[in-house]
Amino acid sequence: MAPDAPPSPQPPAKRRRKIHADDEPAAAAGVPPAAASPLVVFAHGAGAPSTSEWMVKWQKMMGEALDAVEVVTFDYPYISGGKRRAPPKAEKLVDHHLYVVKEAVAKFPGHPLVLMGKSMGSRVSCMVAAAEDINVAAVICLGYPLKGINGAVRDDTLLQLRVPTMFVQGSKDGLCPLDKLESTRKKMKCENELHVIDGGDHSFKIGKKFQESTGVNQDEAERAAVEAIAHFVLKSIGEN
Image 1 (cartoon, one colour):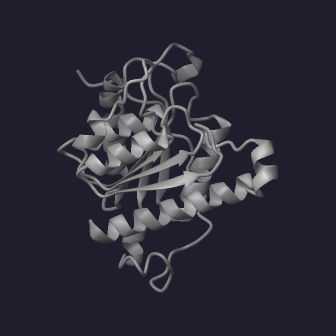
Image 2 (image 1 turned 180 degrees about the vertical axis):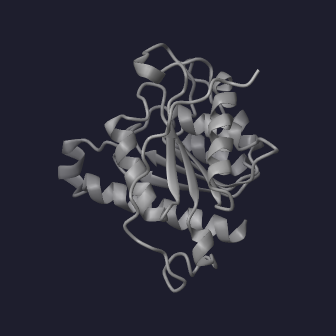
């Protein structure tokens, strides 16, 4: 039985910039201008819907940085329509997520597909990337929840990936200790990169004291992360 149709996706971030053939990093990655406009499907985390301030902010930033044809956001059924139920196991969200992806691809054919997620949404995105009937250019994990509730490392999904994958992690994220992630990355079979937001927590928020003592600025740290993601995505598209 097909999963319930998702609610209408949130409006995409307006594009502010066009990528031209002589632009960087698109030109450096060997990406033709037309192919440099990816389709991004962006999944929310366990505790907040696609309309949260955090999601809307990152949707806009990534839409502009990638010159995306659209950044599609959606709500998983357990949280849609204002519901606030506890999330099910990530595996139970794959069918709905894949349905959204296929609908988006049908609407924007020919554009490179990028799967991006926040926390739980990044874990489900990695599961969806393994589907045989979609072609994924890259997966972007924003705050990947490597540790489960019981503290065990959940790396099975990552070790099965064959799609270029990028992790953006706060250095103070308790759900993903960087030493554990480094060990997992060494075992992964796909190309993968890591960008660390120094002092950031699971949602990349940097404490005021840390900012004052180190000179790190929240906005600058997030912009640097976005730029790193854009470079990785465009490189992956060029190699796809």
